[in-house]
Amino acid sequence: MTILDKIVANKKREVAAAKAKVSYTQLEESEYFHRETYSFKEFLLDENRTGIIAEFKRKSPSKGIINDQVTVKEVTTAYADAGASALSVLTDRNFFMGRKADLIRARQLNTIPVLRKDFMIDEYQVIEAKALGADIILLIAAILTPDEIKKLASLAKSLGLNVLLEVHNLEELQRSIDPNLDAIGVNNRNLADFTVSVQTSFDLAEHIPDEFLKISESAISNTNVIKELKKAGFSGFLIGENFMRQEDPGAAMREFVKDLRG
Ligand SMILES: O=C(O)c1ccccc1NCC(=O)[C@H](O)[C@H](O)COP(=O)(O)O
Figure (cartoon, rainbow, N blue to C red):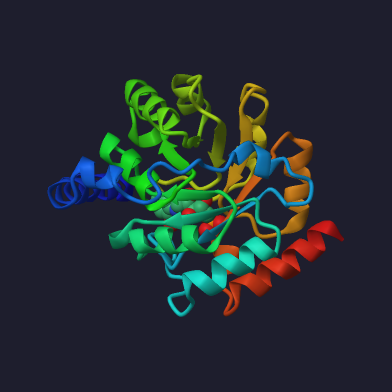
């Protein structure tokens, strides 16, 4: 069983428990359920911002604990001040030490798009994402069929959410493209064996149709890579560990952005 299989098996149990605890009606009564979401595209292409989707990530299966000493408040507000185009907040508890409450907190404190970073396998989670205050959901091609992607993406769009599809290779990309997607993210981390290579983004860039925003995800740790990715057509850069492993992730992002704008 791969780690991804374990995450999905656990997620099925988690979603069943969440459904038993909070009904669809209760989700729809949330203060955020009827809010108008921020446009991912508008923030990513805003030249006053950086294209960086800055992630709040305490722990990961590949690295263990990264940073469990900082708060959502100090980190996400500093990320936004440093020029993040969007925030990514992990809500998976077992494998990433994330919490749904982290997403609510990030929403309360910030006025830029927030991505619910989780393993979406069920329509309930999409509705829940809207209720928690998310603007963007992530669909991971490696764990979904093309029909599931279509169904989840179409539900998300009907709720005003932006949809980011994550792929790791050409086969996943070609079988998963759907008109309801806003952005396609190339994950530079192989989720089966955790090896990382930014070359994956460069290799897939030309295969992503131009109507989708192109995002490069994971293992980005220097600004020269971002400059090269921009030349290859990427407008979004998802960065987690590079900032979160520092004592002050917000300050780390500020320095990074200074260098990027250099
Ligand atoms: O990060 C992991 O170890 C991981 C393992 C299994 C599934 C997903 C995983 N990460 C999710 C992500 O996509 C990253 O958190 C995100 O792209 C940021 O990556 P990084 O900048 O390398 O922290």
